[in-house]
Image (cartoon, rainbow, N blue to C red):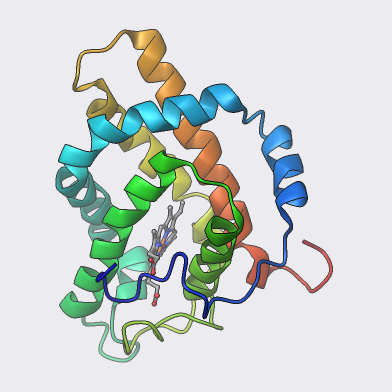
Length: 194
Ligand code: HEM
């Protein structure tokens, strides 16, 4: 994989502090099951040709909120960093496909914890050698799931599938994003309390 900074499956990644069994319990808590895996997989061919347009919408949202855009900007001048935005955007596109592919193996879990670190001060900016804010404040992490899942809807609807099918795909995405953002919260939680 030649995408700069993309490390899913890379042996350099630390092992996941959450076991697959523990993640399984999290999935059960979110009512995430086999039907959701199927719905996510079904969403992939629909979303793949639209990745750029989806990213335009999501980046448009982040760009329209100064407190979000700040996290891609210089800490003193407040000037957004187009290179940082661009490099993260490319990996964000890959994340859309990875979420739809729904592999919940050890590699996937390790990569989740790395993405979490990249939002927190332990890992933010390092991948792209960016000069920006030290961390994404936790208070924004979970709420951003809402615009992401909400704005995905018209893209899921584009093939004209029945409402029931689109509902199932959107529900699966909602659960998957909720579970992933929960994993990403790990470095924000007091040691031992996750
Ligand atoms: C549901 C919530 C969120 C999702 C699904 C999400 C998704 C992602 C993804 C997929 C990446 C790329 C990871 C990689 O491959 O390196 C990323 C990185 C990033 N996200 Fe988020 N994110 C969320 C919340 C937020 C919030 C609230 C902000 C605030 C603006 C934010 C700002 C960033 C930044 C600055 C990076 C780059 C971090 C670095 O490596 O320096 N994210 N996010």
